[in-house]
Length: 334
Image (cartoon, rainbow, N blue to C red; front, side, top):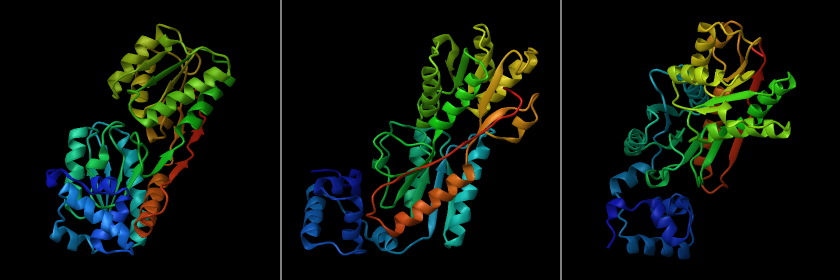
């Protein structure tokens, strides 16, 4: 006999060979479902010993008009500005439709994130928009009976709507721009290659080099902890190998890179050119101003909120991936 506390609506759906939305409609009576399908769902619930919490069900049948946004917000990071801009975009749409936004922080840690998802589910939210901290975590076992939209990053085997940036194309464009200026030894600095965003940026870097017939030299590729100090240390190590350009795929690490270059009085772009993610005020006041990739943070939030509201209204619509374009802003650092 299964422990009913560990059985989710997804388990019932899988057992009955129907969608989670269909199971939800059977439980809540929110949409017409054929008698044959109802029978299959009820049979699956019996087989798995799935018990409906009647209080939760009565609450779920009424809308709370609350959407949660779960994102990694680290106190030490300037890139929090990115996710706060995303939140502002989400809010701008929800407000028009009389929905409220609840903001939650995952600390970029799986355990903390898991607790937050469970807590949010207990609040009877109408939907969850989230930037997952992991690619490999089985998020589906954590979700309740509400729609989910992934934003900026996507876990493996996702079967949910997602709104992401086309990181690969713009990263490739940035490296091609450096190649166009005659650079052949282009270094790459990033955080761990554990998120889809980082993976795509690295893929764009490699593809640009490959298409230009240039080697991706291992000594010019450095991945480490996402911090200012890490960016500083990686730049120090890389400069021994005499790159003529550096592509930094993270904003906080880019601050460390620029700190190192300025401290050691290494001339930019005379001795080494620099391109980095993302567009922040500090990138305009470095010496020289930094060439950056600007992500459409506010627009990401707007799109994610629109996708969420569509999903609430059309539970059985096909899952979609939405890709937004980022922009290369060329300044004096290349």
